[in-house]
Image (cartoon, rainbow, N blue to C red; front, side):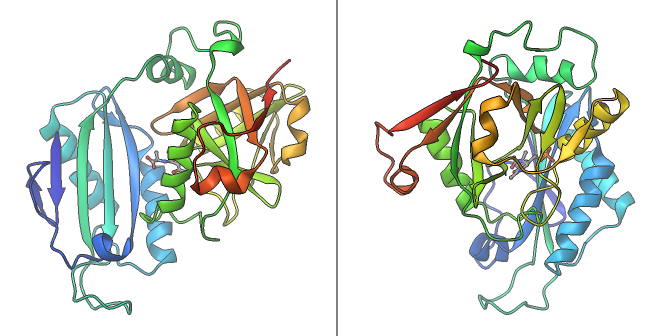
Length: 296
Ligand code: PDD
């Protein structure tokens, strides 16, 4: 485990965040999560490019250039001694007396390197599915019945979900509901259209072709999404960047979600709560729902 705060490597459990840090008080910052495979950060350039876009979008000063970021992240991974890990970092608008108006403070970086918590089957198998040799988890090797469900919930996030902001309350609540219903993810629905999941992008297979929501301001442009889109194009599989409507799930053959930490995770079914309002904040134990099984 390695921690870093505002220029110094620190113990991960150290109390190092001043009370008047804007990330802490306002959620005023952006973040990234990168997977480390074999001691090397995967697709780091794409993550840095996305972070630059997030910072620019909310006018936070980027404290390092590309080379500075590569050095910091490399040093943190080296200090951790981990080969399989996740690097999390955030950049906030800095430390200043609490006032909504932007301060003239310098931005602050915090970073952690954590060894990967390998949970069940998905990590290794999905990793093989993104280009490593070995048995990929496919519909042939993994029976649909054993695959986790998604639960459809209203997308209540702000209209700039393309910014990877540390303000994650709607995502946290949606994911908690998914967790309580033993779903892999909350699949978020905006005006009837499927945007993405609480912490991943979602993909659908129809007629052997791929569908995923377009990269507009309403979704996070996932790095794993970008990688999968490239793999699909290289393999000659058409990719339609169009959002599917909830009503279009009936003829879907396969569903998977993609993210840095979930990699490529196949989904077995989608639960659609009948009463979405109740489902959200009252969290009934017996959520009335209908189930769409995938590929049947
Ligand atoms: N989540 N959509 C949302 C809302 C996300 O939070 C994430 C990633 C993704 C997938 O992006 P990527 O492929 O770049 O990881 C899509 C990270 C992993 C997290 O919050 O931990």
